[in-house]
Image (cartoon, rainbow, N blue to C red; front, side, top):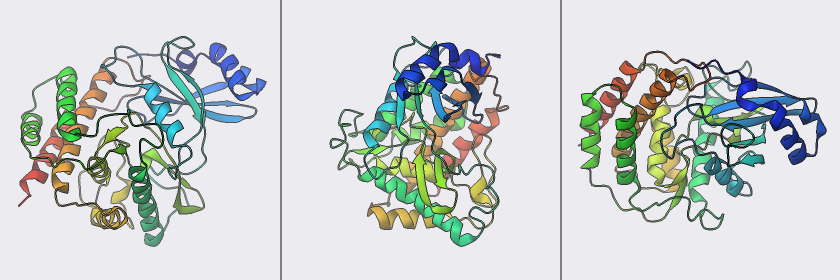
Length: 347
């Protein structure tokens, strides 16, 4: 297990002068770094000095899977969306080579707001109406993202939308093979069934976040109906809107369902609307055909089983700055079995 400290991973002696140049504030020559725990892929740090705080994102340490943890993509998509209806932080500094640190990284402004995780702060979204407004804002933010024309914001080459889901299935099959530590029959069966599914052709490209959920978003502390920033763009690409929406549904835990090991189950508490509410809101706001939504939801399960296995591999390799998320073997199997259940319920 790596015992690298925030100072080791952010190198204030090197980063300080670069931040001072980028911001025009010499106070950044002396600053402190704090790891924001809970991130299970890229590492997130809050950097603070006399003039305030900013956020640094960098990959985990050690061996990385090919094409994973691309800081340049994260920074690029947020820059592109800056002048759209999609709320994103402003990028302050980006280094695509491992010169200042031992890895590429970027620094963005710190947006104030509430990140809904395991519990809500006192006084925030305390009643069902406020919690429904929070959910609606979350869905509406996704719809706004999917409405952005990639070409208009300079992202026409950000990915290939055509054949997106079959290609993603192959990608996550490779990721699974690269990080698995044992055979899991449910994962293999789910992979096979998704591979053989007849996926409809996509009409036009859309920007997909890839990991859209409550705790990857910030909300106004005094108004839960106002989304202030969408964060964690590591998995973003040009993709299929329903694959993106299905990931949100996957993360939206309902009362009585097993509590996930890796993501919060806040939505299972009293007052939060059901997944059916989100589906209705998304359908009305987007006009999308949701007749094959179950297949996309099953794919979301397969994808997250791969993500969970990758996290387990990174923890075992000491790449997560000392963070440990427990034994994930049972969680991987549970997720895959749930994905099969979704497919099994289809008429």
